[in-house]
Image (tube, rainbow, N blue to C red; front, side, top):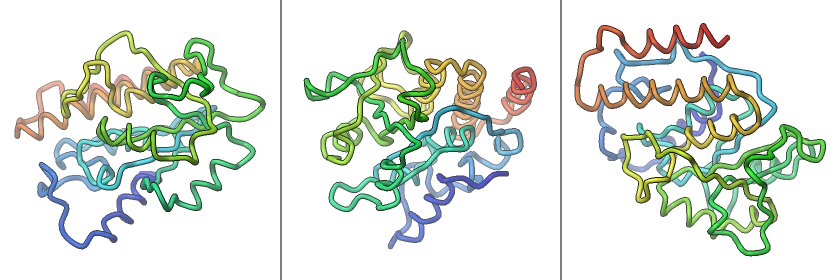
Length: 244
């Protein structure tokens, strides 16, 4: 299995902890990589894809340690995925260098209603895979909704980048964590919308499949339910084979 940016950031964040992480479900034995219970693990059938885009996950401190986090699914799928812990006053120097890399065109994915009136907004229905001759680097603010708004407001190093804003046609399917608004999406759901708008239809479908399989298996483990006869690993494997 490929070790990616989220796995590395998880190990780093654990090494910085001075006490055990006590989130709900944090003391259960889980697969280190997909954070599901061992008998529900999906790692054996995950795959990476080729994409014109890259993703940068800016994560709010303990978010990387939460078993319910869906940002790791993006890194499972998209090879060019980067992940950093957010800091208001001391942003990661490697992240700042990435944002200035001339091959990337950074775009912050966030509701435009929270942006300054002069902020450039890219229309979601006219999003090209190459922008000004560069590859798009989509910046996702990963945390609770309150934390995401804080990161958006207090990250001046993101202020000069345009915004991609979605008005999703369907409500979030994520049942693991309740959002404060019905139209707020899980991080992996947002990535799926981005891939769809890029015209990467198969990649978007795979992202959706991974997201739904993770959601269902997480809830099975949360409720200590056995695998159903037609389990998510088998269904996901069959669906991925049809797409690749």
